Length: 77
Image 1: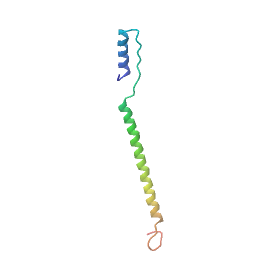
Image 2 (image 1 turned 90 degrees about the vertical axis):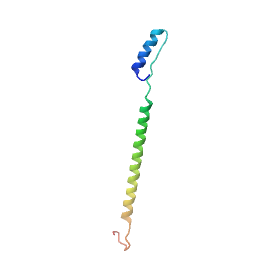
Image 3 (image 1 turned 135 degrees about the vertical axis):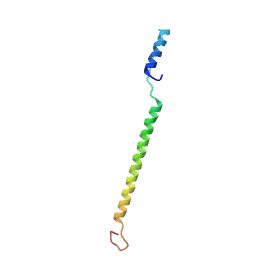
Image 4 (image 1 turned 45 degrees about the vertical axis):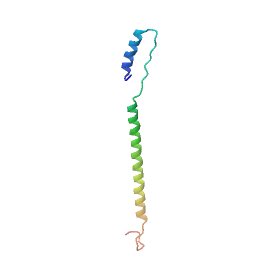
């Protein structure tokens, strides 16, 4: 059933047909919402990893420039 209200309405209808039957409504999570939440978490994780990778590359470029020597042997060109 799509909602708890529709389940309860169907339950009442079933019980009117046979009072000896026992019915139970169990909520079910929407698979589409569940997948969207997973995809959102995955996308966020990929963005964070790319940002970390970008920061690492910038750090290595800056470190490389600081330690580079010029052709005349001085530290700054």
